[in-house]
Amino acid sequence: MLYGAECWPTKRRHVQQLSVAEMRMLRWFCGHTRRDRVRNEVIRDRVGVAPIEEKLTQHRLRWFGHVQRRPPEAPVRNGVLELVDNVKRGRGRPKLTWVESVKRDLKDWNISKEIALDRSAWRLAINVPEP
Image (cartoon, rainbow, N blue to C red; front, top):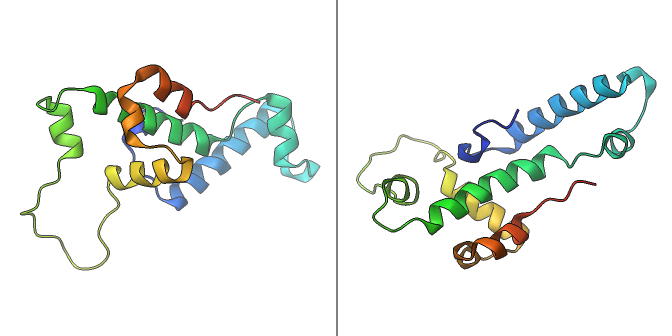
């Protein structure tokens, strides 16, 4: 379900939809239905998987680490981290960008982006252990 997720600027609605789909699959995997009234935490502990929201954030931050370690003239760095200023935007709220999603993830997890330059420290910082 998370194929290519490192590039998604996810909103809360997208995360909720992924969580619902994941729990449906886990319930099906365990042989339970919603009528059995088994709590999500019980099913998650029985299967032994981390919440998909944490895994999604881990994927995004892992890709951010790859991009940060690239040289400044690399095309992926220019395309992802550089913003174009002369583009006229439409009315209303600006669209959520990938960089804004990463900034939110870094703030939520209390990680500074300078750690990304040290690959082993970055890996330890963004690791989501399986229960």
